[in-house]
Image 1 (spheres, helix red, strand yellow):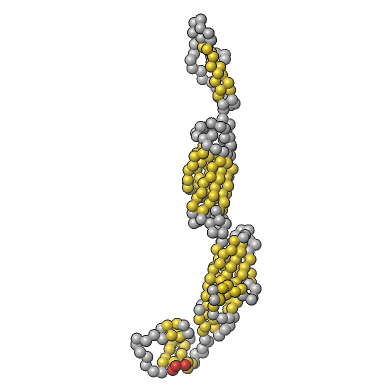
Image 2 (cartoon, helix red, strand yellow):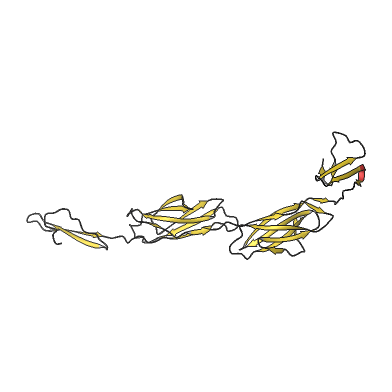
Length: 273
């Protein structure tokens, strides 16, 4: 090599951008020339990692499975540190000597943005950030029933989807719980922007079911009491009781025709007083 001289035991090369072979020769007096061959591999620059993140269960997730792959990974020169992030917060660190690494994030709130950063431990200044994967909230349902049904009139029950999935394409069904079994309502649910409604005219326990993207979610509600419409006039009931509503303040006065024991328990259509 020009300018290397023949007495210098140390030689600093310029920047090397590709693999090189070097030969060093030394000779002591009349002794034979001693040769040493040195191979200097140049590790290619770290490329942008490819990142994936998926729920462990699309319907009832307990966490997120993440995987990142990267190049290069040359035998003997594959030594990386991977930092895993959720919404910009570091959630884990792993080391790898292969071309990919995986990480499981245990969480009951998996929604958010995920990505990884890969650091080449052989070249500490080389740190590459992966692509970002966004995971939406898993949809939930709520069933809303009126507390009372008046004189067997039909009333509307509303089923609502919380965090409506962006994929859409949901189907709905209402059931009545009878003897431990789910019996589909005869009436077809009426679709609404965020769910479906149905009607009933009797007390019972009802279940709203939504199917979206292969997942089913259910919620239960109940209509508990029948009520009776009464006018502002007194209405005599059985067992010597009179109802006297007051429209000015919304109160309802109950009058009994005989004195009641102070330590008694009185039951009206399932309600104890």
